[in-house]
Length: 388
Image (cartoon, rainbow, N blue to C red; front, side):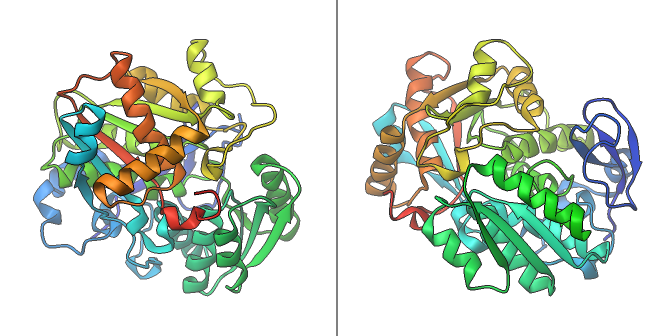
């Protein structure tokens, strides 16, 4: 296997950067940069059938990931999580074709494992020894695990009210846990300050190009698991937005590779009522989102007052013909209970948000009862026992 990774490209100004240097954000406009691939060559040398006999993890898509040497892969078996047919829940909500992709099956119990596997693998390839990350919880736990696997030192910055389970998860590894008085953005400032001072690599959401590459494998998997078809709608809980952005990137890549055709799924961005900068921007028909003041929600992963990738999230929603709506904390918890009772799947609050949102979208006429609708459950409810 060989990677077709060729260069980095700014998603805003289009500046090109070499793939051989550890560049985090655009050096010109400070916006998000993406990993790019020689998709024309890949199209002629890799087919959908290439994956038939590969191991069931995200590295089955090695050719479309940014690590050049397979010996540098740091893996705990992440990816290829199940897609459940949620017939009981669908009947309750009024949806005939409801699916749940359950990311709680990942190592460290959340989709964050994908991004950290890709990023830590690339940092290892760069021969960088220390990493930092700001985290609302699950990203910190994932970095602690993958850095430990790679033999690297990690520093995690979390708000003091991050879920207890994720704080303990970090504390019992060889990682350094720093609890911050403030929100995820405050944790981010401290993380980047330490990285700049000590020459570490900071893995803040979408402020480096590699975590999104791990997250995009959700898009490849959805297509492969559904026989290279895509659902009519994908409903995603959104904080920093790497998941929805990554899936949208994967869809565009698969189109260029000739692996999928037909209509793209509508992308629906779901946020908490108490922290909804992307929804507010969508309602204002803006491409950029102003920071949300005093963010409040029990869904730690959605308590992100501002996101550097705001324009990428909104682009995915606009381009797909989707929408952005909010749900309340009470609705999230009710949906967690309902889904566990009807399907036996223990969603995190963020996953519960997608269930509540699907009913609202149906009632608003933005979904049809016959649509195939895929919900993303980003992590395990067991990480949130104190709020559930």
